[in-house]
Length: 275
Figure 1: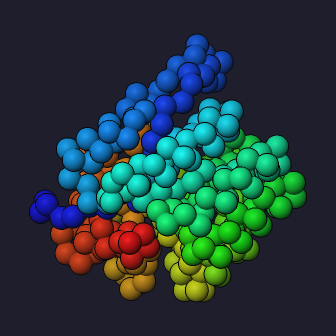
Figure 2 (figure 1 turned 90 degrees about the vertical axis):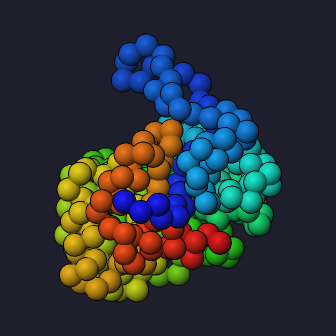
């Protein structure tokens, strides 16, 4: 494949404490996690990544570990003009005070993204999460930031749940559905209709193919070509250290090709959002 420019729309910075996931011993499965800005910059150098949106690492139940990384991500952007920043916020009521503090950072120039996830608790339909969600999306609206939300099949991260955020907020806030639904059911629900229905309805919805099952990027590209819409709404994301940049890149290149769609999804769409 040709060596097209690459913009990484979603990757993480920071090392988390070990945790006994699923009843096992304490582990750090994200073995490629980067603790320092210099390590991150070395990765960008080696990869040839033109621009990266860097978001605090998360995944352990203690959300304070991720809130603590917001300042590190801001510092990374100040040190390297290839880096834009995402800040971590939380819809959970128990994190309300820390989320309020984090949202004050959204006005900072390098910030392009507010990242939320329901992996640690809460849901789009939980009334106790509604005040935090309203504040997060209002902040994004005011400062023209993109809200990133994790998607994966089942529970609170299922697109059936996350889709409520699209319906509620995406008329005037850009919403990036990270991981294209995150698995078989999510891919089929999104590519089979919902993603394109939202685009046609004027929703400001975006997605990426990180974590996608092999068939999904090919089907997504085919549907974009068939329908003639969505070409400007798909981004490349490595999700390092939880993703595999080389694998993600090869899969997207193979699916999207080396023509206009490849250039848009690998770099141009992300430039439009983040530069």
